[in-house]
Length: 300
Image (tube, rainbow, N blue to C red; front, top):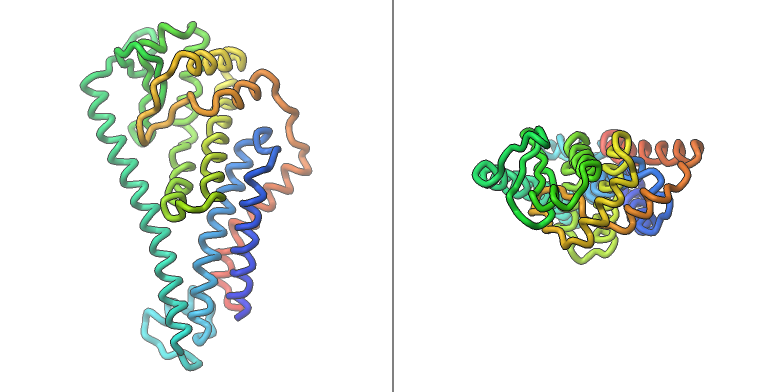
């Protein structure tokens, strides 16, 4: 009973924390830390919400969640009588867990298929350009720049974007897209897209996905400005915004989203977070990441 109560409290705390986190103002000052905290909240909430149901369902075994599940699967007799309420809790817990896993796998499979189709299309219509080595160029008059993430990642830019941007601005755009590839931001976004599929009615989930999408772009901007001028990246963003850039294909990562918030941040950077606050947030994220798995494993 203690495990079920602890997991229920953790699930509620994560839900309230996510609701408050959507309005946090410090996130643009440390986007990678904010992304890690969002991931920790999502993982802890998923395991805690399903674990609370399973912990109550497996209470007659008196072995905790994980060991109780093993005993249930092996067909061992519980230490206490098993009634209808426990059966319903078991069905609800397993169903919830299965739904979360299925939507995550489905979102991943759909993204992989979209990227595979797009790579096949690029092989037919894109070309290499000695002026931008390692980049695929599309002969299209509209401005476009995005990456195709994955094991065979590609950075794609249109001929229209190459005409629109100066050499320094184009280098900044390519550095931004390369940052998406190196840091595998597609894997960061995937769980939030899956959770949006599972809970399309939730405003908190919708806001969380939108905020993580913005944070991912800011993180890519931060990595890009290690190598290029922040002002050149900002002017490139403004040019994309005013030129009517082509929308990023489904499953890919582009750079023309949340333009004004990113431009303001690049031109007028805020001071870094104090170390004490940064370490406190990191400790919170680590605690959330480990607490739910620990409650699944340790019988209470």
